[in-house]
Amino acid sequence: MTKRSLVGGRALALAGIVLLAFSLRSAVASLSPIVDEISADIALSPTIVGLIGTAPPVCYAIFGILTPRWERRVGVQSLAVVALVAVTAGMIWRAFATDAVSLVAATALIFAAVGVANVLLPPLVKRYFPDHLGAMTTLFTTTMAVATFVPPIIAVPVADAAGWRASLGLWAAFALAALVPWVVLAIRSRAIIGEENLPVAARRLWSLPLTWALVIAFSASSATAYTMFAWLPLVLTETGGVSAGAAGALLSLFAFMGLPLSLLVPTIVSRTRHGIAVLFVVAIGSALAGVLGLAFLPTIATWLWVALLGLCPLLFPLVLMLLGMRTESPRTAVALSGFVQSAGYTIAAIFPFLFGVIHTATGGWTIPLLTLGVIAIAAIPAAKIIAQSTSVESELRRREP
Image (cartoon, rainbow, N blue to C red; front, side, top):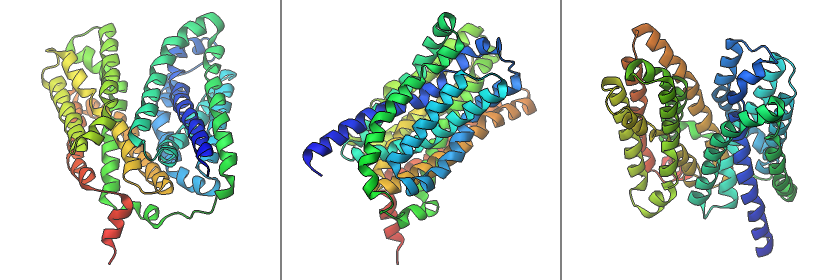
């Protein structure tokens, strides 16, 4: 490959990664703000709304584990194209839904495709930017954060001006735009699809402590985020004595806290010898302090406990970066990404439900909050394993007789 084609491929991949990351989150975040407007045309029961709300982590878990198998058959670029076609089709279908069944089916298609693309992003960065893993991981996770904040701000005004169908459908334009670079890159790579067999390392991921340590770290971040998005406003109004409006503002604070520090993840990891350990200490220590504060001092400095708890999700960009750092080939990165995200999202899907069950059984919020702290504690030994490991392949080589 010439230098010119390499640069051109990187430019296309850069545009593709950014647009793909934006499409993944905008597809998910654009629905909930306008549920009331949709309900005026389509009868949506609380069960249907709840099903849509809990579907993302379930779809991410199921399709995350299937992605490595599909990637081996068609290649990572081609599978990205398939995922984007499905996201685009799902968003258009959802915008023209005529009943609850078609709305749920279209949304499920979107979440399934997002589950596939979630797994592909770290390996795509590994393939095209192996020398800039940190910077590129920061770029696409920041893009995801922006794509989470922007749709709720725009969705309602667009729905008021042009209707809820236009509000949902406009985000398909970004997924359609993301198709262009990936179609080009898929065509360029078609000659090598199927030539690279699944590495032995990828077939033995389940046997490595490093793999399970990454799963635990990813679970700690995702379970905390999903549980707080589901329950934090109610916890605050019942224990902290805050109004519903203030609880919503504090939930926004929780969502925002992980972003500034996550931007520093590559710098901390690359320039500090113990950067990974430092980030784990910050995330785990802050999560435990936030949980204990909300459990025992909910009316004192409530904003502080929420802000501290909001630092735990900084493990999300760190783990995504480590999926590239702890593998030696893009194909192993696909397998590791699929395994870690699938297992992690499975736990994330269970935990909000478990949080509610414990609340119902105990009649209070102290025990559920302390239970949330358990998963943060579980990340302590995981942090040690991750910080001391080199790569999946090297860990397996050490085990060879």
